[in-house]
Length: 111
Image (cartoon, rainbow, N blue to C red; front, side, top):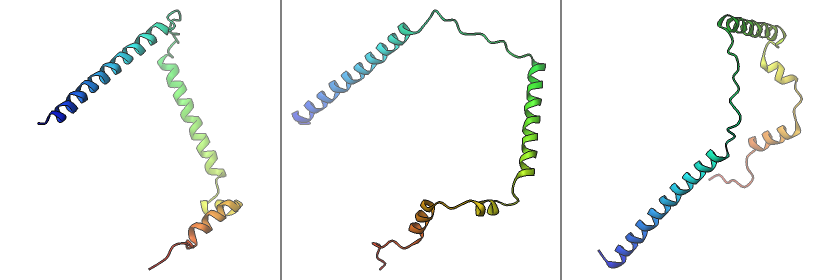
């Protein structure tokens, strides 16, 4: 190999080594700063875990609430989505957007 190629390879190896050493240094520095800045005076709050019977009651209440909400939604829902969408007013921006998408583009040429 030529002397120029060897020089390039040596410079590349030195540069990559320095890069990874710098990355390791900054990672260590950030870890030390994080450990030093953490508030150690506060102890984690301990919340009392619910008893299994109480948790089961909460789950049953949640399931009942969901079932009632779904039943109420089914009673008040419109029969089809098409009728609900037809009753909503159409925004001029929405109309313009769809007209521009459906109309042929004036600068396009077929051929």
